[in-house]
Length: 421
Image (cartoon, rainbow, N blue to C red):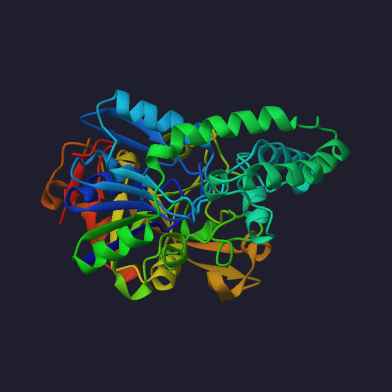
């Protein structure tokens, strides 16, 4: 039995979807345990190109069972759209995809409030995805949440009435329009009827799988430094993103997690507000042009920066990363010189990530090492030896700094564009 957790070692968008897609070939179960549809994973394989937000990225391997744990918050319309999309593409979810009835639902008022709160903050806005993630987690911990289990009785109706009485007052006070109880009730009762075939208590399934030595692949949403406690608070997500969250979010005891794969992009990106020490501000540079990306969830242009080894080292130590998956190495091809951040200074003193808060991290001075780049298209490389010498040295530099082996190297977006070491 092995339980492998796949985490992002930066601020999300590291390429976890692709990593999970190819790691799932040996998995019996693939599972989401945290976050919601604020995370977007792009997967390219024989079925096509998919941008998925809730269904685990490893579901494309036909002998796997997909799970969404109670630690995930669910927008029913998004999940039902994904189920339909995947079934139409021939992936086939019926009988091998299950959702915990303990999971909390994103309600219309959560999305409305998310936007109104951001508007009210003005220049101090956090930069959320406005998908209702923060408000639904706030309701969860303040005993105001609505779960799938509430639909098995009239508990849904009674809870919805109370919540609309509370939330409509806030919405109207902030300039929004009150929601209608009958419309919300009918819509969500409809969602429940469509979701019934996929709802199942996961605890016996997970426990039996562990006892039967099955292989679980746990898929983290977001990234390490968007964690509520260890990330750049308040510019973070609303859930715990490190592997320990799988215990509460899925029912996996911590001692069963035997491998942690840290997915690391060959440079750094971030969506929304918050510190990014190595950010490239000059949009006219070659590096900015190469690194620029569009986020799968929000459609926003990601902020880009050079690789930050202090961030990688901290993620490895925090989550107990046992091996690294380096993605998008091919994007660096053609750069004559590459900057790599090896540490920070603040007021002339060396500091680490844990020595400062988010506002201090905005003020640090990255300490750069310049390394030589390489020419040529490496997207066809399938062995480490096929890479140019300087590309191999770049990988080895990351291994040395993180004291962790790089087991996989992505040289393109497709599943097969991966070097396995």
